[in-house]
Length: 622
Image (cartoon, rainbow, N blue to C red):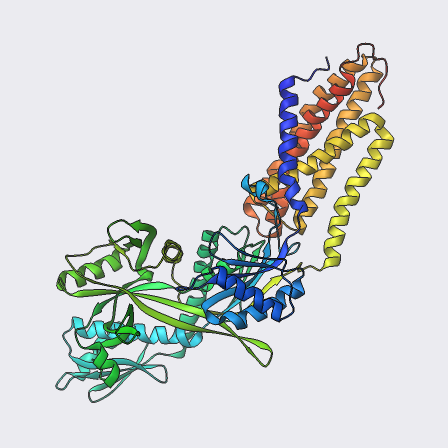
């Protein structure tokens, strides 16, 4: 008989209400906005907000809203993309390098919806756009890092073989110059270097040895650095939780990053471009103030500056060893926590075997000596020159902690000296994601619209709309009342697809729209099977209610079999495809699930509500 239990009705109503709740946020457009994030040592408060509002009014720009967010950022909502771009230029000139100013798309979904995680689905760059970064490896900094590494390797060779030297420093012309102490065997030193670095050219002039790095080695280092940076950027984007990012190499030293649907672009820019890391260095005994004033710095030392201020109100200098004991590159894990003993934020660090051994060797030989922690950060800057944006960076190195080595240290320890839990969390995130093999600068940043063009997008949306409307028209004319039932099922099907994609955070792209159009077609097929089966049962002379029930029962098996095979095809595309193919597979799978449920179960519930309660039913509109 034609029955539909109350439990099934309750489930159907609950599914419909939840689907509507999670699909409705897609109707709220995003506001073009400018997001301002403070760099280390700076904050956003009411006075800063007033300063921003005054600057915008002075530039004849009207902000829809200027709000201080819970994460300490300032969000400026604008009325249009043109106002957004103009406001960003004004605010960058105003705040300088103390804050990160980035373009953003701010959600307008009501707070009560956001509280239950009802938010719009993510749209790909071909539909909604997102943020686009073009990053370039700093060749000079990368080469300098290689020269410093080569110099440190040579110093290590000399130390291990008890060869005394005056200095080993990078020089011009892709070379490193080693000056031996008087009486040292230059030939032996040269042979040791050649054994360690067989591809390098080595020349000696008495006690001065010149090690030249071939251009092929420099090119290989740069290529490897770019490739490693791509992996590091992928890790950092994973930490951000961005859906379906695109990271591509462009040319010899550039990397393009596309982040579809990103909301917090300031955080993305800071995490992607940051090279913040830690270095552990030994403290060299001596008068750092005198060394700074006279320029007489010990050959094994460099002058750094601490967070603490001296009597003159300036950061105190300190002499640190040029040799790095361990750095972020040797890190395995890092986690932020609040140190109850010191009462300050801290980062718990675990080094790999190499870093742990270095820390063990140094600490065991220097118990009672001072060990420093250096915080290194490259800060992006944007200046307006002749009406054009000029991107540059500056490096800030600050000693955040100096402590006495109380005993032997191993792979696990903690560092303090950070200003806030947010700073500790950001540093731990960067350390976990890995250090960039070479510094990178932002050469282009855009919040971009549809990359396929508005005309193509309109056509894609039009195709889905027309396919839906044509299906509705056909069913209404051909199946009459059951056509109306089918139309309701199709509408619920689309609402469920949008709700599921919003709920799981899937990214909708133009191929995804094609998948939805395919879903509409498959749902039509299922309803055609059901309706034709009902007609066949009526021709066989079955009572109307019995014919409807038999039509659903006998068509369900065929529908489920067909949907399982189509689902497996979509699963294969999602699992083994990438980019557009993955998006098509995702929407196809979700559409198959919802179309099977609405065609087999929901439409039967509607039919039962219309025809199930009529005892003397002699005909049906189909």
